[in-house]
Image 1 (spheres, rainbow, N blue to C red):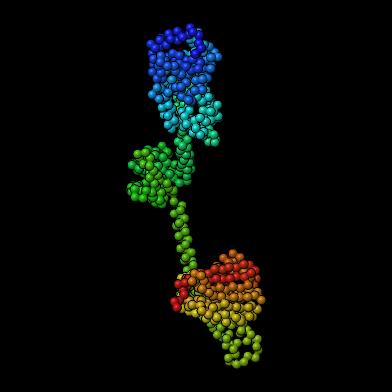
Image 2: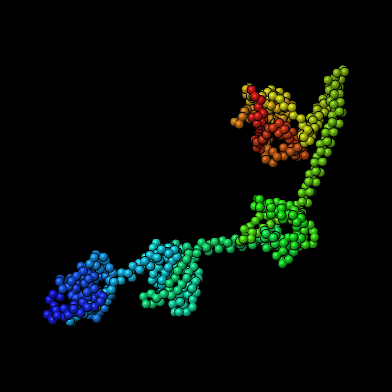
Length: 622
């Protein structure tokens, strides 16, 4: 503009004079950003005086907007008819940066070529308000989106978070909102959007599902309206995340459905009644079937109205118990059916909070069958006890009656086989006497076992405990059984430490225990086998005795059978081993009667080990 035509100078001076009287900020700019003319407001804003010195606008433009300003001037230079809106951050004469905005157009001819007129206004307050609005929108917890069809025009960070994006810029970069709407809900959502944009009625509030970038469903409550956006209608949607509420509603609905199914299908009767007055709110089919009422006869009436309770004080008693314990269980009482029949019932009750009027939940069942079964069981047990006592008394009496003639048989057979009154010529009679004495002795042993078992079952077995040296008892039993073991071709061994402490026990019972165990071991161990008796103090300080053999052994079923009175593992008609099956049951009873415990470890074909343990308190103090 320095080399502009001479006729332009008077025109510029005239324009400067004219602009000086105009309000607002109007500036005539050369293509090198010189300010050729400006209104008084513009000169005051920039802090310049064109009558005193030239000025350049680019010296006042914020650095980040320099390129924008230069590009605008270049576009005007190439197109005379072009007009554009220019928004620049300008540094005021006091150093404060303000935002100016206004149209920029060419003004050639009178002012020379490349001259532009910029009419600007200070839009800083508007920009600040816009920024404040943006901060408000960013601070909202609900998602905000403005869109026209599928394209997002604006959204806040909360909306971006709803669909799983990091920030609003990522959301604004999406070409369409359609992929983020659940496919099942998309048709209804798009129909509402299109209807709203063309002015047709559409729901203001409705719910649908979004799909986040990680595939999760997000339920939203959407409130929509139409706004003007850059001169055209657009949809403003506020989306509230209601996923948790929906989940809670679903859980509650499922819980209610489950309760309803249990309520109606339960074989127990269930009743809900108001705690305040006892009026029935709901009952299930089992209640109606048990008491013989129809539903409409029950709902709205109390138990007193229907006569269901035999004792009117029952309800007050239950309510009082509930106030103290919150819930009661297993209360037995009487109920009356519609036909007047009295029913034995058992109930449990609890108080359920329901708005301001708590409900009483009662669950019960008819226990008439159970009571009858209980009575039958008691009668059966009493009969069994009577029969058992009669059996024990019979066995005891018979055993006693058998002993008297048996003692005579044993005595006379002993005299005959000993030939006390002279030698018997025919020794066959001596052999017969030996057989009679052996058979009688065996029969006496059986009778003694039966007597002992009868005493155990009748609870009359006497135990006389004293401190005894178990080594001596075991050694004595081994001497008694030794001849039989040698005759059977068995190796009888013992492992008995000499420093074993004294055991508090009944000597007679302990001898019978070991004799029975050793006799069984001899009986059930094949020739060439081994029997071991061992004793020790275990890690718990108790007394442990083991009787082990390498005999035929037993399986689990055989062990259980052997513990039963008269039970025998070998139950064939031709039993290989004689006996009554009382030995092991008596051993078990004698051990337990003295406070001990018995265990059996056995494997078929490998042998049996019987372990007897007495607790530490059965060991006599040194």
